[in-house]
View: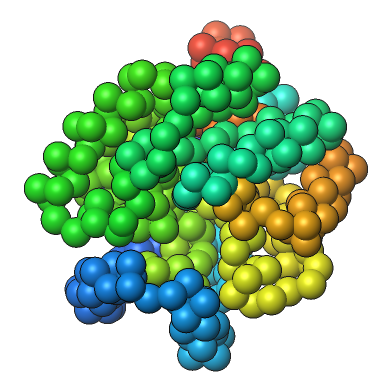
Length: 363
């Protein structure tokens, strides 16, 4: 509870006014608008049981066939304004427009930008160096999420990535679709996942295929999770939290995946440019949100490489944004959550915080 209060970070005297909207706000964050959850879980169990015998080309063909059926589904893809519209309605109804609050990002930055990569197979390992070189040319760094028991990950690779300023995360254990199939399997696997997290000093987790269960994610041994898309009707678990900002699942900071995945755009939808990425980034910038992208090294062919370079060039030309690693955004959001906006002894509005980069904004 209190997700809306923790997001807005208003002076204390305003907090009680927003309590009546908490349930509606959290309905979207935790996908409680979904009406076919149990049916979808049954389908997922069946799909992953037969997936190993379905040729890759047929899997892609079947997902492409789904596109026509989900084109007009809720949430609207690639941009759904439902949650942002709800925030505006709350501010208007409570006459909070112009109220001071703790700004979202350090030093008043307009929006935050995170690059991540899910290495799904050993094929993806071969493209890591190429992607790192591209990112470093633009002075970017990214988070790399590995599947520890699907292929071999050398300690040397982990160390080299860290030394270059990149970050390590865990992407499940086996990537076989079974992590959330039962609580028993989840608990057993999470014990082994924790061992790899300690070995690699990984602070973040992302579930394979973005399969998720908010109640279970509360228990993961990580500082942050990044398994919730804001919107994704094309994934194995359609839906999304509708949020382009971090939020809390228990004590875990959730960093939602807010940009469409490369595989969706270029393989499923067969797009030939980055206009969908550009449109979504521009909207997130306007909303002052978090732009978080997954690019898979497993599918990083010459076309995707070209599009990725175009994307990084597009971002690099923007102004006043905060590019950093996912763990840094998690740390920031946790510090912001603990900060207090109040008047000091002289009546001046100040922020009480562990860090000094927080600024005051106005709704």
